[in-house]
Image (cartoon, rainbow, N blue to C red; front, side, top):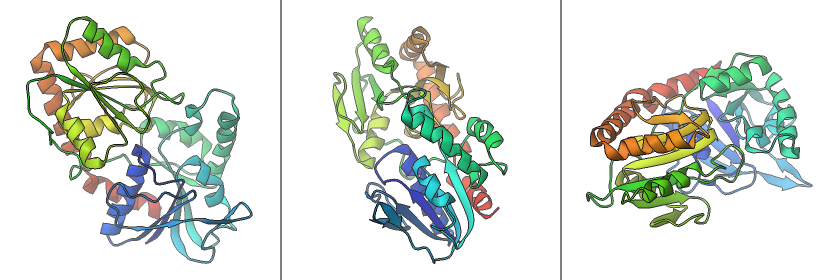
Length: 336
């Protein structure tokens, strides 16, 4: 099968990682795979085993290999949907799909220009056949589409994420990942507030953080755009991940942390398919600061709770999120 994914850019983020995992594993199974990016920056921060190309532009329009045959062309970020839906751009594509990892207008304030534009672009679901990563995305997309969406959950790359601590000590370390720079994320800064609350109780710990942005608060250690080996070691060295956001397409950072043996304390509204409260994490609704903090204290005060979350998180990833079991679902969705 000749497969083309159309992406926006190859910059480090969870969504791009999943695209690379798809194409790597499809390539391993003998498919001819390519990722075409619209604004450059090919993926160079994780191993890739597929072709990458960058669209060339003239007079503001992307030049693509119009007459090359593809068995399937897959739109990804919502900015790629109009191109893939346009027959004249890919006239020899047998099938046109869209891989949906998020309801993307939720990144923006209600009724702003981007919010309205992206809401309108969901009309393209009458042309593009959707593949989604979670139950809530299925429920959102199905009424808007001409075809029933396929659910292909995210897997976890346990060759990349596994317990690998930088140091082994008895010191307590708490990790905050990410940023609050859009409406879907932790705009209330729940994670940092919870850490400072815990410190105010006299609990001693090191606070670590990383994201793609400059350091937003005071941390004991902070990394901006760490490489993949360092990310694994950060997860593995920390005891607890504090993660809060309004919306996620499906859990990603939390799963990586679980795969590295880190306990997860989560606040979220929607996108928690893999988060099982009391089993592989402690979880509360986004905005419930007091419960988020009490869950953190429960993990800190009871080693049995912490160790159980760590053990169950590792087991959940290994039992439920094996890419070898997921890729056949992806192949079926692409062929359908």
